[in-house]
Image (cartoon, rainbow, N blue to C red; front, side):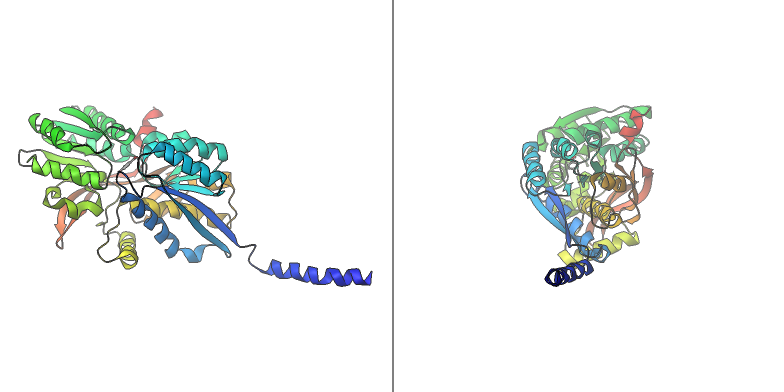
Length: 397
Ligand code: PHB
């Protein structure tokens, strides 16, 4: 009897000592899939840096003993098979708590059924085709939809232009933007002068721009995926002299993506876009974000809307981690993501619509101007306040 007590006591002491530690050190694993190579492979690092910067700036808010680990994977551009394979490995082998990231719509679509099957919450930080969030109840989107920018763009443009032409990349977000812009134009009593879809991969924009020039529209509305593709559009637009022949270039903000403006040069001056984020916005929350970005990544580095998608996506994830004290339950996590709000995102006030799990945000009209010697998307007007995805709103009617 005595010996038994002797044997038990030290063990009980050890258990007590363990209990005094922060409730078992906990690591939240985020399977982060983005594009680091292939088409617009420059965008992945913006998303990752945005997410990491949020985590760094808010690390103190993590519950005691809880840490976050990113498992970074390169989907190599629009490559749904690769994205699906990576997501499968992250879920089955690495047992991630969440999936996050994804620049391209086809990749998000391929991953959606896996999120549902495995009940792994999936936070979208870029991919913008409206239907994506309807593909899994485990998806929440903290980026944007193309309907959110292209529909108010069309409403605004209908007051300024009589014969707009549309040119879009031939895949989900391009089709959404073309549909949204055309619908808004027609609702305002106008019509488009013509529409063309260009291949997603390595398009040569020159013959398309020539066709547009020949049609003599007063505006050209372009959606292409941001990054180097945007610079190729601006170059072809400038080289063929469309601006000089009276064609105004307009579009969602992807076409004047902040990080490429200097590469675009003067051809970008005067381009008018509607979007939810500009690095040049003078909101205090944005000034602080841009300053932290430059402090950590270099004085000449500029964040873009993909970076803000990473930042806000991480803010939503952090909210779910804090509210559950670091022990993530998938359904509880979705409830928290669905009800996430931030009055002070760098892009302005944002929230997630609990009915659709899609972001609600402002849309700003911007013009590319030279500010302090550098090209910038200067916000000139708020054209939409607390805009819900118009595509989903129209489905309800
Ligand atoms: C998308 O595939 O949904 C996508 C990609 C790049 C963008 C916008 C949307 O700039």
